[in-house]
Length: 439
Image (cartoon, helix red, strand yellow):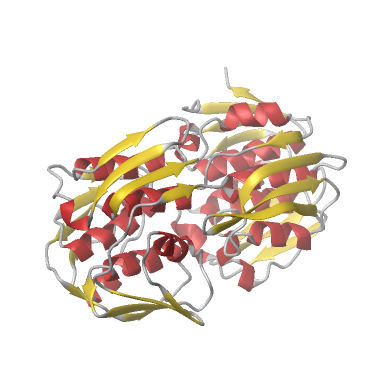
């Protein structure tokens, strides 16, 4: 379901009731990738059918994998093993998906498959040396542009050899790319993290029968293992739930329940930070969905206050910071974030774009090299026009801001919402937000 390019949000409304959100994007990508290289059928329920995951599906179809995908999130993959993949006849278009291009580069480099991978204008400006450099240490031959950006050209040089690699910054995409290359490398591959990043790759590899070793901050596996097809149930995406968590937490008297949300401990920083700001958030019906923990989340609105965000929580909230910046703008006092320079390398420079947008709405926000300082005040948000720069999370974050603004907020560049949250506008309306396509 596509989103209009221009949206307008009218102030007022209160989020309430019970909502579900689409399947977790990170888990959906990995389920498709691993099912495509496994032996035997893989069936995925609840797969996110947004543009990003469709790009992953289409890439494997171009390499000869039979994938049956339905709009309701059911995906069936006829896996015939990694050695059955064929080299694509044309360049693989990853659209706007950084997860697709980085993980697939590691996987294909390990298999020695020649391919070219690129995407839209936004993706083709994102840094890729953080992936290509460790893969080169394993023996891969991958060319980038002079700026280290896509398109990436994987030139066959197999087999690779395992390495021990210390991540310079916490990055699940880099960690996953190295581990996926290691699946088909000789010897052992080990990745050492300074701070834990999301661990969906490690959990799901185990679900497909791969032996993954965890020792403190080190994740390791040996090459030559075979994946076996399985059934995967994808929980709701906490990154998509974050917009409604923030909207309800900011609205005094609101009460909202979000059902079947993934509660992976490497992804719950948004809840931890909102609680530090004074939010009333309760987890109910905690349970397991395969390798992933899930729960229902109940959030009750009340006044929030600014905080200094602990550096230890940055990796587990990296995708949710645009929404958290809106909470900070409407909270009492100053919120400070540092050690989050990764935000400058997303679909947009999320530090500068969010700071600029908050200024447009009358909020004092200072961009730092690696973070932001926001001086919040309840009622501080004014109306205005915001260019989301084609970044889905920027667009949805400022849509939430519109509920608390003193005048309407008009958003442009909103079609990218479909990459992660098809149906966002309808879901937001159902929850109580006054949002519509701009005339």
